[in-house]
Length: 318
Image (cartoon, one colour):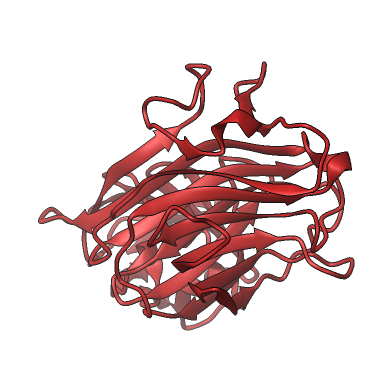
């Protein structure tokens, strides 16, 4: 139930939540704070073409020429779990088909850019838009799976997050900050490959950009099953259009901030923002106002928490 206080602001007293539970298990993380890329984890490839710079970022640093360079590290996740990747990615130039880079999320082999099977992100192509793309590589050829909605045509600098669930549903997100909010660039379904041996970074460059690729805060995590579900510790009504849901454990930011994850019935005009305020608090802003004497149901039945689940909160007002 939600009661108005003496100032007429709605106040919650009862809520019910049902969720499929999750926990998070890290596969690898590298912020290059140790000043190298030879350990924890160990990267291989054209290692002489890369350095860890003074800002503790991985940087392409090679002689002026037209060539390619790449690094890879061992990565064999259990794709029966949900896997999440995230990294910082910058190119200090306007990308093109001759100056482009790929993030190999899953790769069967170490010969990145050549004859491998797997999936990669790409920025850089002919034309001014340069969207973020997810592509599948089948040996020597590639197939586009997602073309993002944002343009990264001029000196792109972004954080990228990718989520793949156990049945091969992919979602890609971008943000200007590691803490978000993350914008959904697109999603698709593709389960052509269900194993991986490597994660990698690949750069194609001309002589003027042989030192202009940067990477940092590279991580890959697996979301695996848990027998203890998240619980709602409480609901706070900040005003007649805004609620905060307090959980007892950390929630997935990218999924929590997707407006499409939520549906309120009866509608009060739609949800305008969904923000994970900290690890355990989600704030929802509505375009309309809650009314007294109405029972509302907030459903989360889509890809909430990056895996299929059903959740509902019942709010009664008087």
